[in-house]
Amino acid sequence: MSYDAMTLLDLKKMCKDRGLKVSGNKDEVIIRLMEADEATNPALRSTSFSTPINTMPGQMPVSPQVVYGRMTPQGIVVSRNNGTVSAVGTVVILYGIFRMFWALGFAAFGDGSLGWLLAPVAFIVASLFIFSGILLSQEYRNGVNITIFTFILSGTLSVLFSGGDLNPVSVSLADGGMMIPFSMMCTLLGIGIAALPLLFSEEEMKEGWPVAIERLLGRENPGKTVLSCPHCENQLLVPNGYSGKISCPKCNKQSEV
Image (cartoon, rainbow, N blue to C red; front, side, top):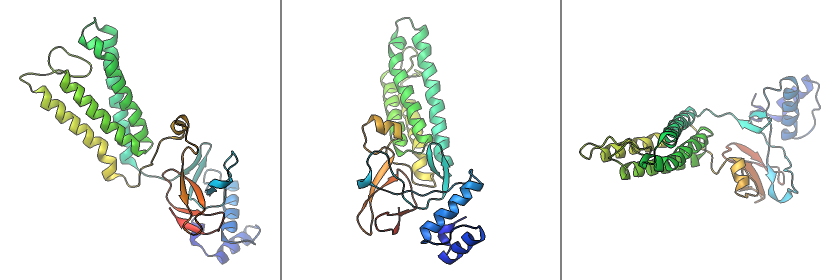
């Protein structure tokens, strides 16, 4: 139920009908109703957040802000329906797994030839595909960037080591120099597939990196973006990629992100 679209009077009537306290401003009444909803049906939770960055002693305090979604043990999950990004991410992961087994085959059964020497390089390329596919499946824009970079790297290696014996970085179907245009076409096809989320995704993709990676990079507020309240310039923290309403705890005014 979208409590935010209702008037304060209607919200207070709902509180009265449920036997809840009716005093307070609109945000307080909404939170009271949402807490009652959570108590009766934990699977359908809505919560709110907005954190002033200058009041963070260590643990991030949570301040009232209405967000329609669901709460999981990992945090707030806002409803998203971005099948294109997930599908492309899955395809890239599967392709990376195929390339990894291809490289492992040369590493295990090579006899010191060029294919055996190139197996570690092919394994790194395959790992990059899997990593970028995971980022894509989680709807991070960096997943697109890394996937495109990896396809360019893979295509370059395929051209450089085309011809001669079969090897893990190039199929080596070269006959009369046909391998080079074939490799270029495959690379362009991969880049086009990786770019599909930028063209057809229904929502903006997430910026930055997953929280675990941001912690490794030494980020002060992993998974969060610092924004200024347009009404009072107070510094706020919101999750990366979040869009919707936020409420400033300093001036108690709402704004759109």
